[in-house]
Length: 437
Image 1: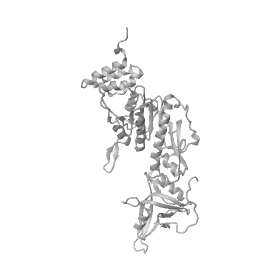
Image 2 (image 1 turned 30 degrees about the horizontal axis):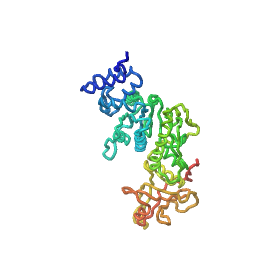
Image 3 (image 1 turned 180 degrees about the vertical axis):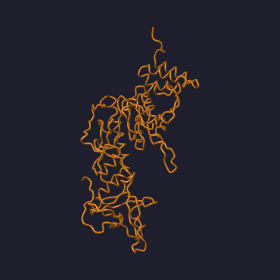
Image 4 (image 1 turned 30 degrees about the vertical axis):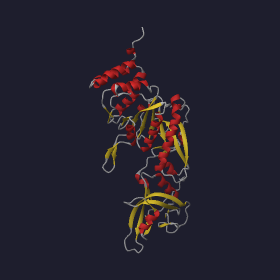
């Protein structure tokens, strides 16, 4: 005789879930038995069951309450459609990562989409603003607005108290692939082993160049003439996995990190969508199949920035100082100390620390120069000229005095009202030129 419909595990689970959803407190009562039942079913049934909080006891996960239980009707709808789509879990935190997530969400809504964004992982809400109010990350906000489950573990390593619970939840979700973009947490092997198709990362450099935490600032600081973005498989070593694809971006010499970074992440998101199909088909694999395996001997590293790196003393070549202004735009920013005094000597000199916003190099090659500490306006009256120790010259186009808004050089100079301005004197140097030891 034909098998009873109730003998099919998936349908049986749906019926049990439907009954439990009608009984107050029944989900909690039946949570453990359902978990055991789920483990005994086929992998496809298990994957489906993991998508609903009805199949696990209600609990607080990684600091965030799980999604509300789905109704029986919604479970049936979910069962009927999208079952063949790959499940993708996204990990990211800042605004550039939210942009990447938006690309994925938009692509997943297309009629021919091969994947769905099943969940989002991001850093926990952090204090923000003067009042230090706990604020969700940009990725967190976008995911909630899009109706996507959000997980906020404090970390993935064993030292974090919620790491084991998070990894258990990830295994229950059974994602096919994960995608990271500026997530900000180390990914252990216990996480990387979960998605069978691997974890892909959007990295804003032309790997193996500038591996590490600050690839865009370090590339601009080094004065390179091109950069780009890479999509690679994540391995246990930082940014060392097989590269699935790259896109180059020529540099003109005036780009700033805070504007270039989102541009590269947008490019990287488009590149990711181009290669995802190949990952699903097996064209690109974690073992390097179809990929460009990086040469570690060609690797350079992009260390995390520190606040004191933003100090400009002009003991280096003007081009190096200019590149630092570009590289550290946004955070930590760059600043310089000017010594200001009335030209008649009626008052003692005053040291003023100003933020340097936009610069250009007017004299790249050093040479003999008189009055190297003197700060003056250029002949056109639109830039402040600073002479470096080696005689090269940097023009400041925009700056920000203490307690004031960003202004152009002319406005700042007019505010000096004829006072003498010098850069603060420090130990003399022959200057540092990009590309030289």
